[in-house]
Amino acid sequence: MPNMDVVERVALDRSSKFTFSCNKDLSCWNLCCRDVDILLTPYDVLEMRTALGQSSGEFLQNNTKVIIDPKTKIPMVQIMLKPNERLCVFSKEEGCSIYQNRPLLCRTYPIGIAALRKKDDPNPEDEFFFFIREKFCKGFSQGKEFTVGDWLQDQNADYLLEKNKDWLEFILRRNVMGVEPFNEKEASLYFMAVYDLDKFRKFVFDTKFLDIFEISKERIEAMKTSDEELLKFGIDYLFFMFRIKKTLEPKKT
Ligand code: SF4
Ligand code: SF4
Image (cartoon, rainbow, N blue to C red; front, side, top):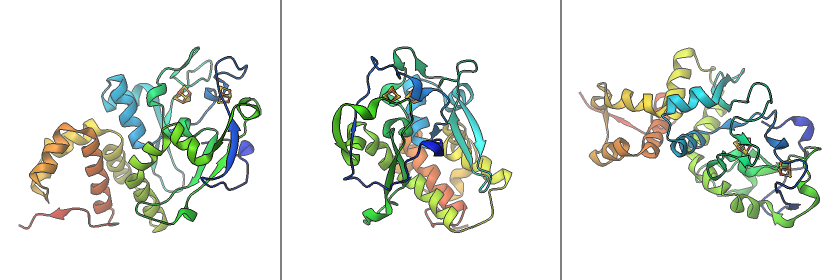
């Protein structure tokens, strides 16, 4: 989450222009990876841990910490910092050790996302952005001109925004409903279904779970072999369990 002192309070859209360039000859190299609060989306966790060849439990334990939103009690996953240097655990002298699979917030930087278009919402006014202008960042004073839209494509951020849309819709719709904060059981269920997919896999396949819902054979097979399919199912399960959308059909007894 960006420090609010460096957030420029001007709403941008995809056509807003700015100049930016970043390279390791700059004196500010890696400063943007120090003392940062990088929240991870479910797809960030999936992509990063797959790239590192780690189980979800291993990745979450070794590289992240969980913080609880004080109002909604939703658990959020944040990248851990190295204890002494306060640098992101993935930061190396030569740059980000997980650059090809870096999380969404690192891809969009120095653009912050204030609001996103909800899934299937054709209205572009629902989406807006802002600049994060850290004093130390020399990137704004050089480089080529981008529009916000070009930047998001250039950094492959649009791809992750698209992948996270169902999850984001779940979060937005639950918050808009103004319901009670998550209790402990709900928070654990949510965390397992979107972040700790290896645990969720056991919950789905090693219990009587599949006797409860009508799920097509094709979907079950896809979930067995693909973490991405399992995550999509996990989000459908949350929509159903929190009574936001009837995404699943219970079996008739
Ligand atoms: S994931 Fe990479 S780009 Fe993001 S803060 Fe860590 S080192 Fe920097
Ligand atoms: S120019 Fe900005 S983004 Fe690039 S290394 Fe420097 S502080 Fe980080």
